[in-house]
Image (cartoon, rainbow, N blue to C red; front, side, top):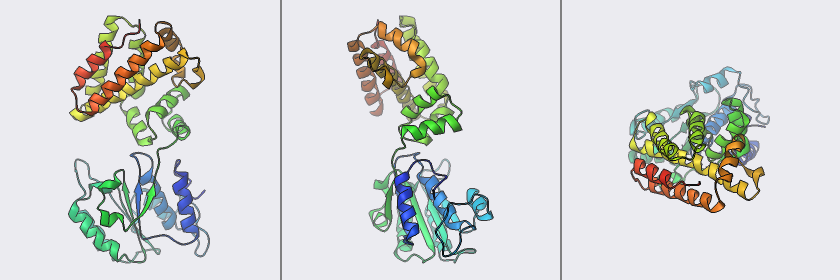
Length: 339
């Protein structure tokens, strides 16, 4: 497999295997898809394949060897023929000077090999003057150049730039790929990897973000609170949700997003309870919580659980409309009655 270091994204891999097999590589591509699904990783792997010193002239391309000087330089983003531009920390846009640097470098022939590759991650963040400058390069690109724009917001790309790039769409990753990655790379047990894969919504990046922010521990805390459906536990559940939202405090919007994610954890759990009511236990995601699922199933009716799911969905909708997250949490928890 040519793209052996890329998880999932088989359609994009097949497209480029065919392109490279027939020598039809274009000068500019737009990699578009949800955040965290591997677009940038794919762009880097494509660059490594093209720059790998083990490639033989006149023969079919092979996967990057990962051991030659070119591959190691590409991994460190130090290859002289590879320029990666991304949004700088604490910056809101890619500046005109970043694009001008690309303009200056793209007209200089490769130092080694036959190709120069430019990857712009977070391309939706390029300022308007930058897009206009980039347009000049796209109109008359050097024959040895390859430009890849990577974005999760293709609608934010200047239409004249968009039209000069070949669009490659990337899709959310399947649960099987995510489960395997979280189990092997994050060292989660199978039930934890299953839940995280479901909540990651097709994004390895989002799943890793959740794990970095104590997702597994927080999930355990939430479900422990649900284990005692009394009033004191209800108050504790609201406090737990709010405390977690504020624990990694960066912004009000960040707090809301962490509450939304916890609502998703709870909704997934109650959906599993509902499946149990209808004898569909084989589809339950929270397989490691069977005892608690049975306990709440015994104490509730399908109507109770349906109402709780509606409350959680309404709370998530209110949060997305910028409602006060503390009030939303307290109101939602008060309505989560199943005893």
